[in-house]
Length: 141
Image (cartoon, rainbow, N blue to C red; front, side, top):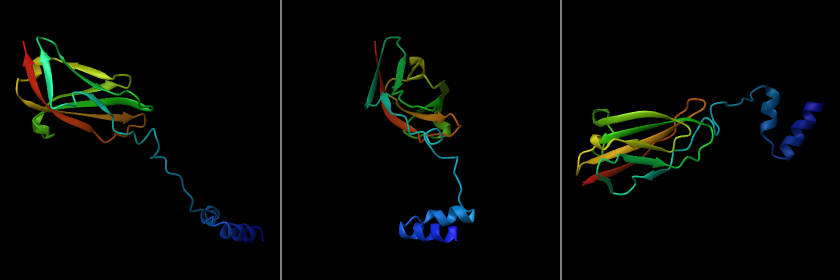
């Protein structure tokens, strides 16, 4: 009798999930949420068409560090516009508190195009979509 009353109340209130709860079909997904599905990181520099390297200074890659539930960042630098394994020239995993990385200017050639990508790794080990940008290196001095 009680089940019938609850079912009628659920139908009247359009609570279609209640019968599933009583039937044992209700489940919880643990693979979604803010700690499992991190958003793609936001890049800060270089995000222009060119990156100027002066003297012996390293090229500094920067991003916004506003993510909660992040365990690490993975940065990759490719020669050219394509992000193929054959063009990968640099890869590093960084701690969650990092918001920049300085890379030696020796890695870059004047006038060449490079693409960098960054992704987040959540506390649960899930990876975000990668953010990326291409830029041309100009060396001065």
